[in-house]
Length: 227
Image (cartoon, rainbow, N blue to C red; front, side, top):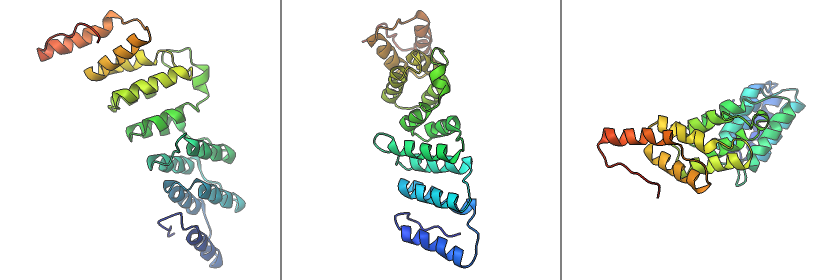
């Protein structure tokens, strides 16, 4: 099936569907899935709803994998919305469809694509993170991947603060710091130590030993205090 290159030309999309109907070609899950993904990549979220609605009307349900692809295309191409309203819109479509998207996998994939803040917004929609918010490990897998992918230190701190503000993980700065030390990322470690100091969190001795070790290996002067 040919899919018009721009979903802004909705008449062309409808023309394709009309032509398929006129020659009695079946409009399958693949047809509607491809259309929805193209529209999503163009940021045409209302068109996505139209495609999904037309599919429902014809007794065709998009799979959870296709809906995940729609959401990924939207975010990957920079159409999440200033307040992530387009993400919420597509998540609502997923819910209405009765399907369940693998939000955890999608968030991790987006982190590796550099869409960290959007990934965090997705993660916040996971109900179990609200019930496990007393755990040190809550949402830790995402924080560790954010550090592992060398996200800008300022963004890492922003993510930690948001997780704290949302009541997801009050230990997020410590989790990120421990991963930075494992990764031997000294710059981020110092940024996180400052952030912890600024909010009055205790700076444990064991945080500094890896930094001292790195300085010894590099034969550099030891930095003894936080500035």
